[in-house]
Image (cartoon, rainbow, N blue to C red; front, side, top):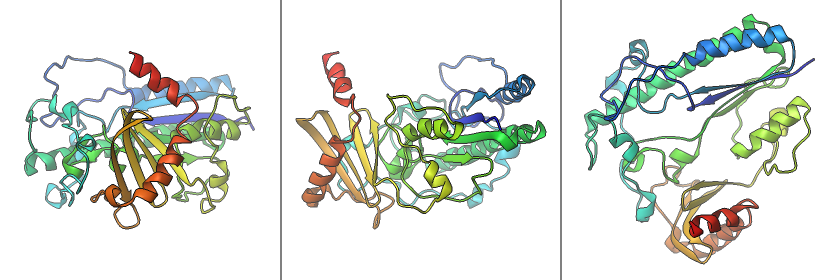
Amino acid sequence: MKTKLLLLFWLVIIFLVSCSISCRRKQSAVIKKPNVLFIAVGDLKKLKELNKPFFLAVGFLKPHLPFNAPVRYWDLYDRNHLTLPENSYPPQNAPPQAIHNFGELRSYHGIPQEGRLSDSLALTLIHGYYACVSYIDRQIGLILDALEELKLDKNTIVILWGDHGWNLREHGLWCKHCNFRTSLRSTLMIKVPGKTKGDKCDALVEFIDIYPTLCELAGIGLPEHLEGRSFVPLIVNPSQKWKEFVVCKWHDGLTIKTRKYAYTEWSKTDCLIYARMLYNHNDDIGENINISENSQEIIRELSQLLHNNRGRDFNKIIQKGINQ
């Protein structure tokens, strides 16, 4: 049986318009692009006619800003039942480097240029985010329906992921642009005909693991440059022991996440670490208390593990940035 690949990238390249909240870019211009949903379905029909293995990537912008979605998706949620996060404040002992001014959001109409957003505006934004999630959930569902109608679902691998998480006032933040769990953790779902059964898995995986996973599932040899690890074994047995840690980066901030801890250090070079934070996810999954000051031995171990697993070209990239 020939294997096909259909990848759905959440938060990438769609233009969707309708019921907007007060989030219109001040410098905005009208952008006209065909609807990605219909393009994707049309491409599937063409690919079926070719009757060859294919790779199709489909990108959706939402739920990225601006939070525009048809009114029916706003109506799915009762504003009176929406709540603000309990930790709408910076973590205790967090370094200033961990907090940002969410400038991306502030570039939209109706958002104050400085200071905390009002509770009313915060709830509107949360409402808009939920509406956009449901809107895109519907678009993805329609593509999967088309896959079934075209009788391609029995031999097409489908993978869905988002490129980052999002802050909805946790720690007083909005948008991404930070090293907290709310930004670093993202959606990853995969459907493999004859293998997946809707199971959930809490193993630690990284985006660099997607490439080798798809290669293995499609019977394609692995290029030598890959640094990720195929998670096909997790598809077979989601509860098996897996990676002990994953690594994430945002500008100068480099984070290592283990089953228990999330440790971040900010540095320009290996010799200049200018801020740190450490959270015990067993006791503080919301990352509200930075315990780095009283955990020197744990930090030494995690920092060494982090430095040993940053990727083989990490120092070259850092040096290039310094030289520029």
